[in-house]
Image (cartoon, rainbow, N blue to C red; front, top):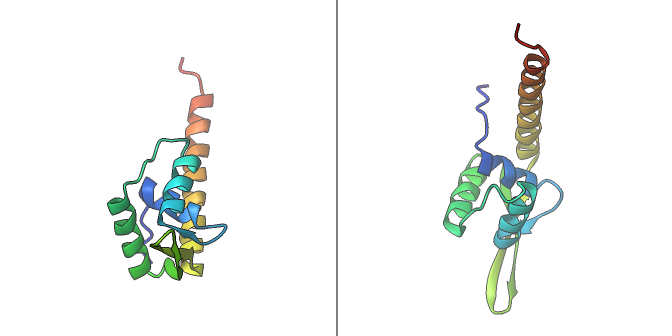
Length: 108
């Protein structure tokens, strides 16, 4: 299986859904918080990412509810999504370890 690195928005969307299902604006707010404000998703971008993740089987719709007259769609992480997120975390940790080791060596 070819494992591609996740884009930063995809990584944070999966991370936002790791602990519980969330609706679109909840995912946007969680991504903003998890990224320290570095990643700001627009609604169209979020739903593009979610549609792709649903098609790949990493995220699935959880439920719909009406709130203040508007329909909220909730999404949750699947087992495949959790595995993809865990693999990306391991990849990023390995990259950070390699970089730290190089930074520890002082040039002559």
